[in-house]
Length: 332
Image 1: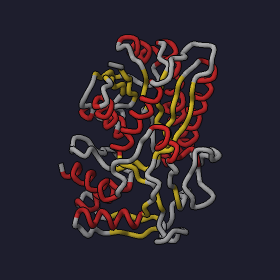
Image 2: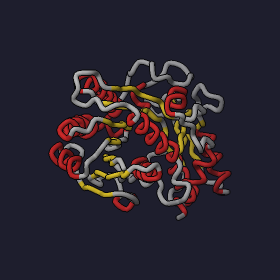
Image 3: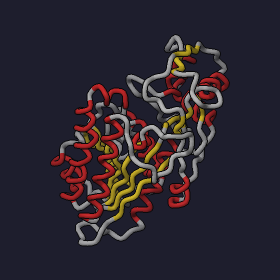
Image 4: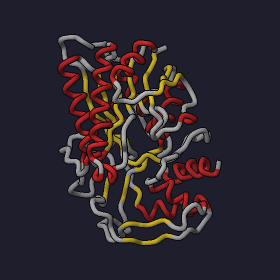
């Protein structure tokens, strides 16, 4: 049974991926400092408490647990906060990833699946699904910090035989369909859990920022993807890497590629709000506000390459399913 180090395994997507890895026959080992993740979200596998910037501890952990590959989620994720404190994001996201790659080399681990982001694309010029070939023009330190990691993966693959896949995804949503896990950010900034907080009475209203965009109903459109499907895609990417012969430390180039993950169908803010009202049966208060600076009108993934390369298809592409699962977890 292959052992997988899951850096950031106590987070929202990481914890769901632990379950998917175990179900696929892998043995996950969580590595997390629990600054944002929750220890009680780690439902399977061994746990090691440590910081992703600690190269020595990472190396020791990989050797002790005989790690075969890494799935890397450990990062700061709030784009707005990255503008206020860019050094923190470069320190954790970029510096931590460098320490992780160095530890992998120290321990002779050759394979990594990296949790990247659509923020590497910045603001698209038109309302068309984003392809991986687009120029990378991040508009905030968060996006820059993630794109720098992708560059490190590409260059390390060429120099040292690393085999790496970066997965760029858009808006993670939903919860474990069986109700075991869900979204627990503090503070919460994602739209669907905020809307559900308004439905539950935990907040007085939900704010809708911008109603005059060049979209059918005037509100921003985003590609929401169920966290269950994100977890499945990470397992599929890992399977792909294990199909390749090990090239770590060899003179030949390794492998690096990046793939978008999404449904290819965007939903507007107004549609999310209405779907939440339909699912919950609660007519909560919505306040229309001015646009926020830097919010693109349209961000939707072209995930054709991921679907063809990994034979991956979202099991829960419907917005109502994502909201229903999130609502079930919120009530639990």
